[in-house]
Image (cartoon, rainbow, N blue to C red; front, top):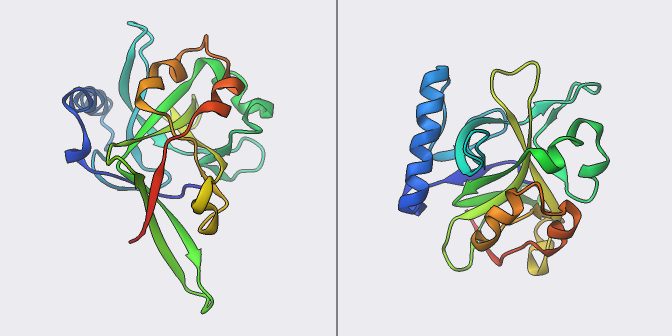
Length: 200
């Protein structure tokens, strides 16, 4: 599960910075407040990378993190990658509405023996920005597209801190992930990058 992530501007490359500017221009045109740095929480509007409908190439857009489940009334901000294809509300998103959420790190909490929760941050071992795999929906109740972060079983030592983690997209496979021609279940099984945890 990923309940919060962090975005630092200095982590972004020149190309990323231009994409951020595009998302900022769209947000300004729509008169919505978008967070381009700092801690991002569910319901916040943040820059998300998705294929442009006009140019058919990746660009960034303001999207809201999470959407209201149509029958349960609860906020959905994470989705298990193993069962995403089975959910009617995401059926059209599996191929047509994939996205990438850029992050400097994400956070998880571990309960200690005393009952308190310790927060840990997870960053790429090579120091590069993390690219989190996601899907977005066009929610009737929102002016913006709404995204959910895909999760998978935690790998390696991360399991000691939390059983789930976001699906991570290597930069070299970003366009492949975004393409509707790429088989969803096939690429989900192959994705992943090494992350390191630190108490924050």
